[in-house]
Image (cartoon, rainbow over all chains, first blue to last red; front, side, top):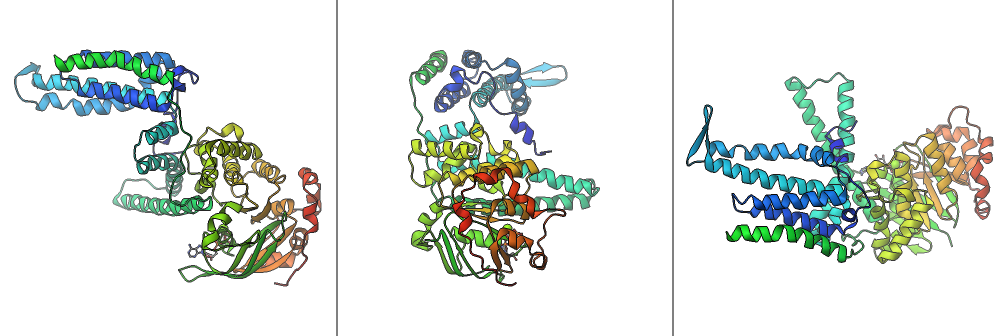
Length: 259
Length: 267
Ligand SMILES: Nc1ncnc2c1ncn2[C@@H]1O[C@H](COP(=O)(O)OP(=O)(O)OP(=O)(O)O)[C@@H](O)[C@H]1O
Ligand SMILES: [Mg+2]
């Protein structure tokens, strides 16, 4: 069962060798390091191809240390990357300035450059995200964000979403099955009405669920403030990880900005 | 001192429905009481009162502590309420985090909270699942983890709302095996009469917000007229006489068995 792409979420778990150096790093180091790489690629001047190249080398290094197979990286990146590239692919058609003719269509040279830069940055960002989720369980990412002073309201919302997405997904599955069992085919306007009611029912169920969850939290002594978790430790391994990534990416980025 | 004392408890929902209509109940320390009753009898409403989640008229006293605004925190630490649906109870991304939620709310430091988590998960035989997400567990496993979330607070009184709902026979047996050795006083709200017969020495029947019968579990369950009057029935062919031969009965503390009042008011 489980509509709503719940299974896609299930595949987002960790991969590679669970005991690897990278897997065991404090999640904060991984969040900061991989986010840093993404930022470096995003702010690189157009045409400075060395920056995304350096980022990709760094990411390849992380993947190798974590023993995350290339096939896994490819399979997960494939889900997101086309969407990002598609958005970027519009640019060459609408950009101004000199253009090149490719068959019957004219592509803006500036636009092509921009597309290349955006595509490179998007690839680096996607691969960073894939490697972060492959080496860190989602709850650990959340806790890392929390300790990095991301507002608690945001991390808590993510935590509840992660938890109840599956519950809601199961509920959607059950409701769809109930509709299908009674011969429902979403073809007519009447069908649209049924889907509308399904959405309403889902909302009400979600709301009732929220109230019961809140009661259950109060029953265990909750009074409005989430208790804090265990503090982590940033040790030599974390410093080494960040230094290695920095050594690869920072000099190249600085050079590209200056040149 | 009684583990639980309820006197004249009445509750009316805002919608106007009188869900509890003068409930009186005293439960001795270590006793296990089944709360039986048809749908809509007020069982869940009663359970929510024991933790101060609902407020009504009347008195609730847990281990001598009168429930009120000033004692709410203390009472919630003593009463462990396990909800009807484990998905309501387990809301954190991992089992470990969820079980640690109660102890952390009690103000325990990380080391002691972690020790409580290990102890509670061990008691329900779910230590291996600490790092997993609740949605990855089976219904029976979720139920046991939900029980661990309150055991981690070391409650004096354990209140279980429909603990066997949606469990297959094996999960149900595992649940009985997990609950049986626990020393806590228990209130087991259930429609599952065989489960009540296995777990509890005493049973009360709640109907339309009142307690209409109270006595040794076997006597209450043997009273066919009483059960029929309140839409309760034992499964076809179920033999109360065989219940005593259950394998885990031998381990039950015998002190519990002597503290039973035999007051059986007529319906
Ligand atoms: N939030 C609410 N608002 C209004 N009425 C309610 C509410 N919750 C329950 N009731 C009503 O109060 C009565 C007692 O409900 P309660 O949930 O305590 O019954 P129950 O014995 O637990 O039933 P079940 O076996 O179905 O779980 C029912 O008639 C119900 O309709
Ligand atoms: Mg109920």
